Image (tube, rainbow, N blue to C red; front, side, top):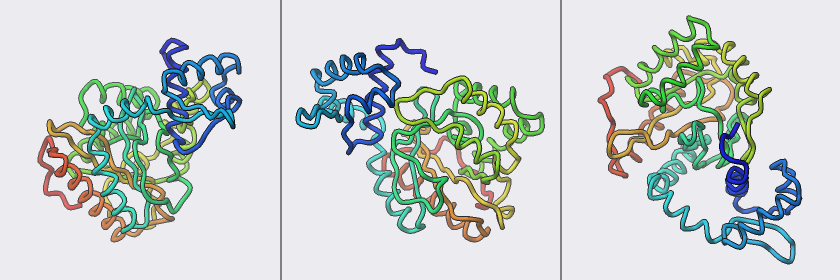
Length: 304
């Protein structure tokens, strides 16, 4: 639930909603409905944003879309996440090569936000829109946590401690070290992770309510060991894989975003999964190099 004041939050909600579907125009009624606003309140807000050129209004069709005033904001954001331009190109090559979906996700406001996406998934579980966000909770965003600072890892592990079993909590903490050593995160896709995926997704411009949070917390306790993190790729034969992620680092050794392969088809053999991991690691390393980034620590010689 947003802690922002309501008027400020509504402005952000409108921008987030339209940014998630940048090629589409929305009517006043559509925006009001999707953001649970009255038409009168939505009208005042949209007119104000259009006057500031944050929105463009089509007078003939009476619809709204992103405005030119946001270009400067977008350019400024690209300076911070400048690796995205490089990443998109490399992600497109990777997606074409593996016939999988690849996305880039960053941590913003305590959420994992889809910053870019290339390719098409081979299962519905990989359907993610740019602008879609999920809470940073186990087992999502493990790369961000494995190399993260205490301000990030503390709340993540704290949430797990409250709702996971002692054994699952111990494995989660051990898994973070494993992710750092081998340089990537991989988890299976089972009943609990599928349920969690459905419970955590939130459309652009919406907020999570109490019942949704209760479902999320309860589902954390149902995650199996491999749904949290797969211990070894040799355990992957016959298993459905949910996602494989690898970090992209900045010049000071912090994670800018992670690259994620998702929507993998059916079950996987160890050999095929090894190829996916190798190609993803090479892509993440290439993006890191091209933006003059560096890994914060040397990975072990552990086999991929």
